[in-house]
Length: 134
Image (cartoon, rainbow, N blue to C red; front, side, top):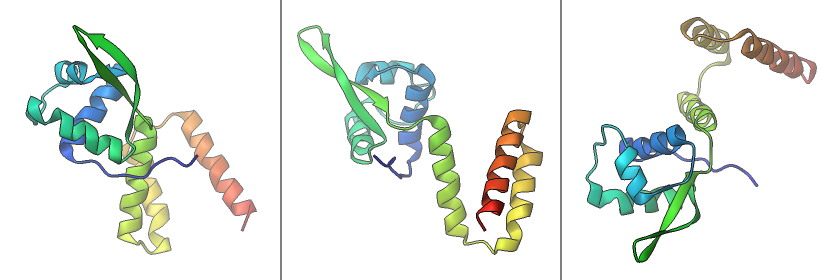
């Protein structure tokens, strides 16, 4: 099954950041309690969760009993890394860059970020594979 492709509003991103940080299924109440510096009202959590469900950014993983009722638990459908790659791809496509800027773009990413030796080797392998398939 293909991973969903979506963008997030600021409020949706805050909820996703909370789910990624906690790294376990959370109820609506958990999200409200664990969300740091939330810019949304607690009463809008239901709308935000439904928007994230519609975008397939989160999924319902089960139910937990809360007093006399049951509450749904939610978890992300993509990792933070997968989402950030998705965002980069979408933004890069929107730019519609000339192929001649790609080396400069990659240089910028490498120079401006702390990249491990393993990630550099992974990048080298992808470049070699691409070169071989040309």
